[in-house]
Each structure stands twice: as C-alpha cells, then as structure tokens.
Length: 99
Image 1 (tube, rainbow, N blue to C red):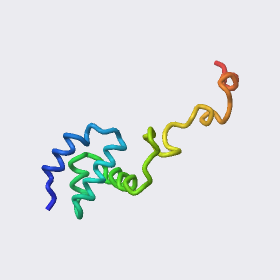
Image 2: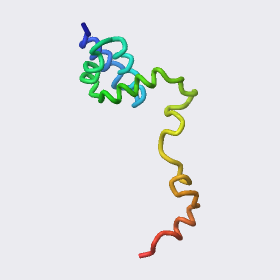
Image 3: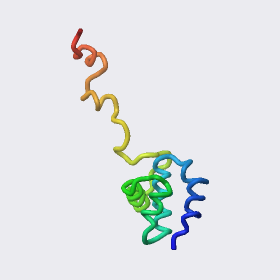
Image 4: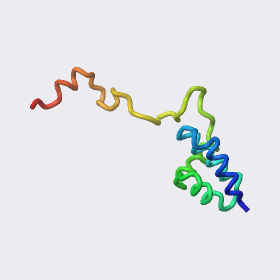
C-alpha cells in the first residue's frame, strides 16, 4: 500500500521548493520508492504530468550533469547568433523591412 500522506508531506517540505529538474527527480524517486501504482499517486499529489515524471525517471538513469550545469547539453534557449542564422546585429537591422 502506498502511503500518500508521507509522499504529500515530503512534497510540501522539499519537492515543491525545487527547480523544474529537481521536481522531476524528486517525483521520479518517489515513484520508484512507491512501486506499482506509484506513478498515478505521485502525479496526483505533485500535480506533475505523468510524462514529466517519466522524464524524471530518464534523468535518474542518465549520467549526472557536470558541476554547475542545470540543463543537459543542447537544452535551453538558442544563442543569438544561432537564432539569426549567423548574421551579426548590424546585418539584421539592415535586413528588416522599413516602414
């Protein structure tokens, strides 16, 4: 039997105060501890989607991130030069249509 009250207390004490990745890892750890049926219970308590908790389980199985990193390589917002296809800021200004 899954102790929902214990999971809820741990979530309110620690899990809800974590960043996005920390919440995923916390929830995934709780699912593994709870065993069969844990995904549905943890998802309901935390308010996280089941797919998010599943990504957390993938994160638990993956290599740890290098010190100081929050996201995996390739994650996050694209750099300015990449978004502008290599154009420098002055080139972008000239390429915009004038009103």
